[in-house]
Image (cartoon, rainbow over all chains, first blue to last red; front, side, top):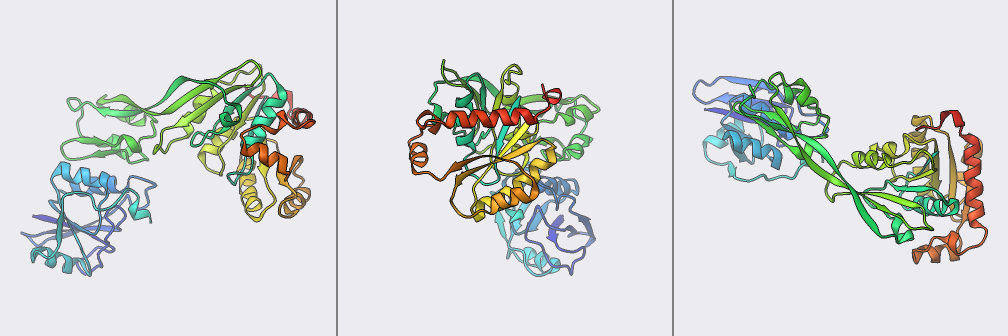
Length: 121
Length: 284
């Protein structure tokens, strides 16, 4: 399973970034193979629609699970469309959030938990 | 000739100047381009009729033709399209209607649908200026297409008075940018002066000749006048901070209708503006 964590850096030891649309990087961990890859969030400086750009990017990375802090309505509609499940409450490092997810300590959401432009505040 | 009335700060008296100027001139058109809060008709009280829906096109993807190449989503500066592994999703509220996605699609899979941004209304009566006003839908972000649509009703044979929204962003430049002269309304308070300097910077970008009306003159201090003198910005008119003008304003009555001599002053300002606009450069 491919699990995406929003992050301020590129590695497992980077600090997580709780803003989905305007995070710096996506770190994708493959839970079977253990491989780690990262992708720059190209939408970080978008005037609008950053969440859409971010959701599109991780959909095309074929992530199945997203670990983050908050997701707005436009991004959430894309994640739902492609069947990516969203878990919130990340903290500390990417590795820590990944572990907390596996231990069932993150919260799954079935609706957006932020308004549009939340990441610009 | 088109005269735009603008300001940095809201509530400085743009609508007061626009309406009273229009009433002082007779055969003119008045355009209320403050489409978020069009107030001119509070002074005029005309019966309004809708003349136009202002629409904005947005893409509709034909999934039979779409090859999921993603060129449309890459092109869109407003991120209104998301190219996903199995479909392209459209977010109409982010679309600015440029039509670029349709042009760049190699599979001709982008069709157009349209959404309403607001309406244009018209009001006429024998002894009032003809009024056109735009009304932006509540919650809609794009004011400029409505302001542009409004200005398509300008009759080049008559003077047009354009009441602009306040501020320094796109809607203001859309209202002011095609005018032949710009009147900046301000008041000499710290707030008025601060926002006046910002508005001045915006108007200078347009290369349109401009002058200043000081409203509520006598309130605050003299810094606006001192600034205008130093920068050689003409002060066209001063409207005093007068109790009677304030009372008429609070009752929704244009003060030129009740106070003798003011129609002449506004007409004189119009003549002064006309003399500063080169007839060869008047924009169609």
